[in-house]
Image (cartoon, rainbow, N blue to C red; front, side, top):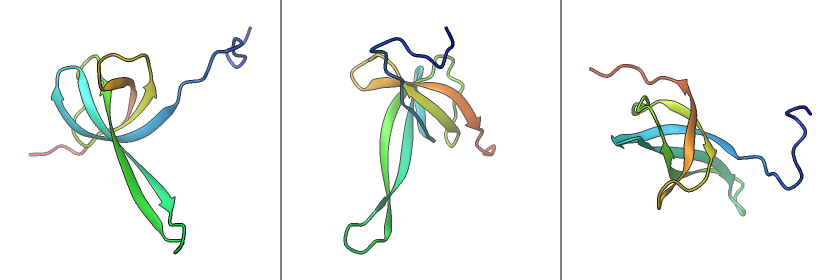
Length: 94
């Protein structure tokens, strides 16, 4: 059976892309997800953001990195996402 075909009842896990805002916790990063929402009345696009905690097993993410995160089982009270890959590294700070 190919990977494209899913078992009945199995849901695909959402994947989002965002920036790492904080990496001060052990094996956890805070990721800011931004999206554009169109204003109902004026039609102007407004930038909205959510912060999510994501599991980073090897502590390899730094502040400013662009990462892909996906849903997983709840790991702690606030953490139900995990870092899948680091898409872009932040420029080195001195």
